[in-house]
Image (cartoon, rainbow, N blue to C red; front, top):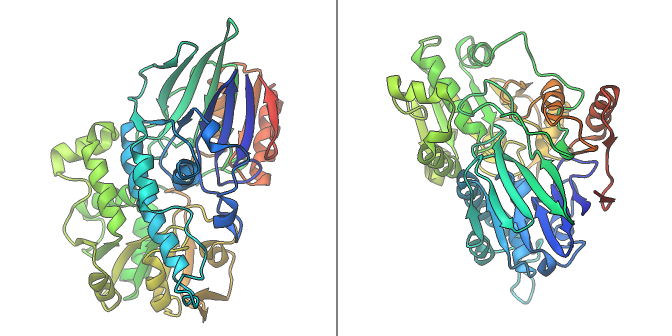
Length: 460
């Protein structure tokens, strides 16, 4: 049995791991690596023949885990993609959105004399997304699924996102049973809407994310307290607006539920809230469809108060005309829009009109990868480029980790300790500092830890 690390190795994005059991090849996740300026060109250069892959296991829908699946299909992959039902639904939304983003980038520059777009060529088109969706086979949580006579897959809930799972593979390798766990992204306990991560079984090998290695989440303030504080400062003490960049899938639903609870309890006077993202509307419908998989708090709220994602003074914005009307709304308001790292979507329009507004606060609630506009703002850049224009930053920039969907250092250590005494723990999906911090902590606890480079191969 051989394991090769082709993505998220000593970096955060682009999760992709190749497990070979004899001649059978399984790819665990196939995400977009967008940490390079030339990521569209980089992502179509697979280090293996896509047609040689027998099966893909998808841990969850986020684009850094799922976003290169249509490229894999376009270049010859003909097998199935195994995932949970919510992951299939949410991934479909994200992949179609990626096509729109590619097409917009392709059309940014003038057409060539032959009438073709001169911007970067799209990685894939709608047809390739539809071909990919046709390959999805959904598996329920905690139901062992026999891939073949030698391999069984079990999905274990890990929070983080609706449908997100750790993939546990039980393998008969020449008469010897071996177990390997791929954690995907590990969530945190008591997160709005999502279930707590379930304990992982004892295994022989672990491939774990390390996003928050060496870092702890804020403990001296609750999410409710922090949101009340930020809204009070931005919208009540001064008649301003609070803009919250939030990924349409996952983060927006949890934020809307948290705001619903705040205004239901009348902790603040009524304030208009706009969710400006058609994709968020689609994703929220998926959360409603799979309501049996949300946490008990959300289920109880639904029984007593009604829909967690609908309340007075909350408006979902769909058309571009409605979005422009939000920009012309001059009373205090909260605008939730995507994308969370500011690299595309309607959030850029709101930034364009508000980045130089002294009465605007921009509250980041998630991770921003290096090189993104969000990262630059969080790093204190006094001037940023938005819509091909250099703009001074006068808005107040704030950040909180209380809505981070990732478990912190202690959560990661706890998850890995649940797996007993594995022969080796591989750490991926993290910046260098996080990888090294988590590695050192685990080694001190007696674990055999490896931080693989891209392309590193291990015999298991």
